[in-house]
Length: 126
Length: 173
Image 1 (tube, chains in turn red, blue):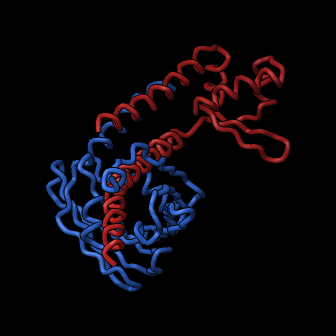
Image 2 (cartoon, chains in turn yellow, brown):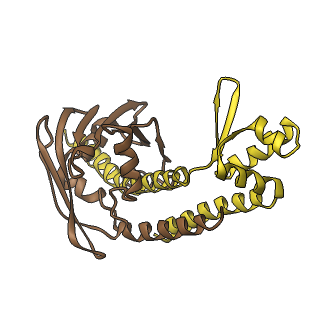
């Protein structure tokens, strides 16, 4: 139980670290503010922040890594919007679901080992 | 000498993976160091199911475990948890039971939004790859299951922790 809890906390700490790192930059905070008003393409954002396309792509990449922004490419245009917290919740839920089954399967291993032993003993009798 | 070799514990646990395969599907995989007939047996005999479905670490205990494991047969698992006054029941029907290779059942405790679970057992070199596949009726049904916070493991304390983590997350953007 404690192990599981630690993993949850570590998981979220890593997420928070990534978020804080992403937010340490003024341009990236500006981008978030901008996306809070409306979604925008990388080209739009580069223009607004007087940056090269490559530079803006990097910033958006950092925000995306931290789960603060999601992007979607339609045709040749990559549109950015604020990351949905739901995605994060979904990841946390799937991790808990995995842990639930991992715990069950670790117990199942014991049952399986016992059945294997039993089968060997029975096999010897025949 | 035989006995000593056989009683050696298996020190390395095989990894369990879980992913959302699509909008409507969840996939869990795990390998067991035993032939499929043995793993299958542990999934289909209620007295064996009882021993692993609710590990002690969950803090839940089985009140009853009924499983009529044949196509059309019903199952009903009832758990108690110290944090919950009401026992929790998980129930449904087996749609398909193919010895040593495949089990399909419904999950009806959530009403129409419940998934259909398919478990396959694939044996190779004496080991069994188990794949558990949950197919939800719609994207919304799976989204709702996730949004409810419950994984079916009755981990109320973790739901509280989640709520706390979400609150922490809200403050940062």
